[in-house]
Image (cartoon, rainbow, N blue to C red; front, side):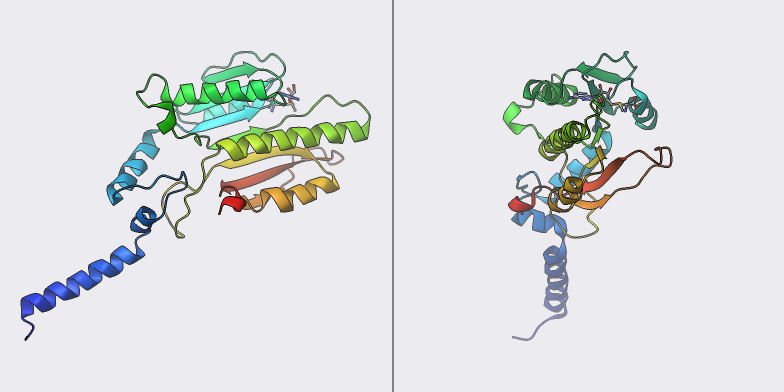
Length: 247
Ligand SMILES: C[S@@+](CC[C@H](N)C(=O)[O-])C[C@H]1O[C@@H](n2cnc3c(N)ncnc32)[C@H](O)[C@@H]1O
């Protein structure tokens, strides 16, 4: 059969369409599940997600927040609709636009309460069944937690390690995960984590074994405001990718 101009045109454009479909990360996303394990039926789902992302509140958690210096900075930098949660074992004076919780972060009960408050802040009375709520809704976890110095270096380092581990575990369970799609995808890049720690050989291992596999980038800048002789430093971890054992 001789190909007519119409059939030639048609097959050229459908080849182009097929090629575009094959390279489209959104279409690929339909084939595999997205970061939250949800498989969407059409490209339109991603358009809606992207629209909602701009309107949905960003969620920021400030651990070891008292007296509130970091929360103040966050509140000033955040948009009015963003949700800021501050937690400390000590009392903290109320701060406008910041939900303050009191409790020992090393206790599971307070972590559960914090998580419940975050979900309440995001969904409020919205008619979303708990099973269908996205439980990875945090954009940024900050931890400046530090126990009182006892003078016993070993005990102080141990406390610092416990706090770093607890803050990281909370972040791993609650940070938004970067979608596992091709480079340049305009969707979320994954949440971020900033944690204070005391320099110690175990922390070098923690960075290599635990943080680096989970984040796009991990840096340890020393803020010029930190005292030179101080052994405190910060892990700045960008773009949570999720648990590498699940990849
Ligand atoms: C260096 S201060 C934080 C300063 C704060 N980022 C600011 O800008 O004002 C460390 C805080 O960690 C808190 N902290 C220490 N251990 C904690 C724990 N187990 N749970 C919650 N907060 C804790 C302390 O009470 C203290 O307020």
